[in-house]
Length: 112
Length: 113
Image (cartoon, rainbow over all chains, first blue to last red; front, top):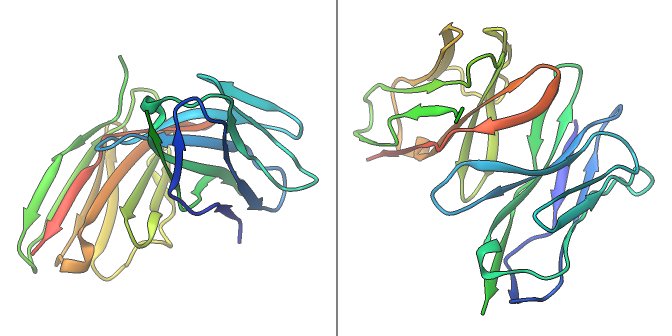
């Protein structure tokens, strides 16, 4: 079935470092791709999305490009802040009913 | 500010007791998801409704779990009888059919002792 694979965490960075969190997917058809973020004690929030190949989603300095040829949707940010510390989930919609499937999540810790 | 509302936020119960979790989706949304989050398994999709009809509940243990939408403003997830392995955070999310992103509630943290 359709699935999402993310790099294992935790990812630990210093403030202002460059961030990459890898995400690859397996899907039939043409899924939409998402990154969600979860802050401690809260539910998931949509960070960005892309609905077709070569689309770039962006929000709050984060970016990800839908790469159909490599089935990837890697998350990047040029300069992370302490406030970016959270768990990041890659996800896709699957099947005719748009079932939302998540990866395992990657914890990011940013230190001053 | 439209949001998904889940109650209760925290629930501690004894093994064998019935647990009911409630979710109020965002007004106008016609898709509702129930997820369970644990450290070991991550986010698992338990059930999925569109226009109040269950589309997929293959991720839900059928012998003890049940999910319903009595009306468009209420979704429920029930566990009977509860077991310690059910301890987790349960999230509800809602969305629109034509807009596939989902909006999450803050979750119900369930502890079964």
